[in-house]
Length: 129
Image 1 (cartoon, one colour):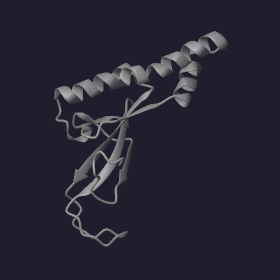
Image 2 (cartoon, one colour):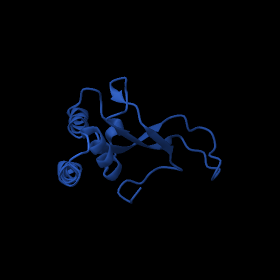
Image 3 (cartoon, one colour):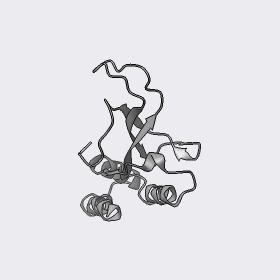
Image 4 (cartoon, helix red, strand yellow):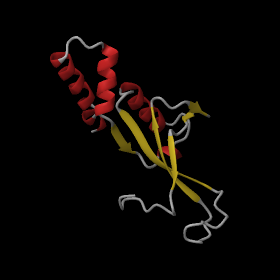
């Protein structure tokens, strides 16, 4: 589970407490954040409605694991009527792969993506995209 994977951050913190007891909590947290990050692919996160149980569960996970969890997801919009430069194909939608974490600010009840990268076309879910 996601909770089990993010226990790596806590394990690193315990190890640092034992090996380097003179470090402050802020320094330990910074080292753990640099060494461990859990990226969860939640492909439909962008489709969750504000106030939905799915979005609230994702927010709860981000609150419980603020420094070690990030969520990757897909979004699309209707601004793709122009031709794509790379392959000269006209698309009706543009697709983006995005990442949010607990540091991302809220915008219209959802977190604004930290990173957003345009994909070259329709992402076929389940095939490693």
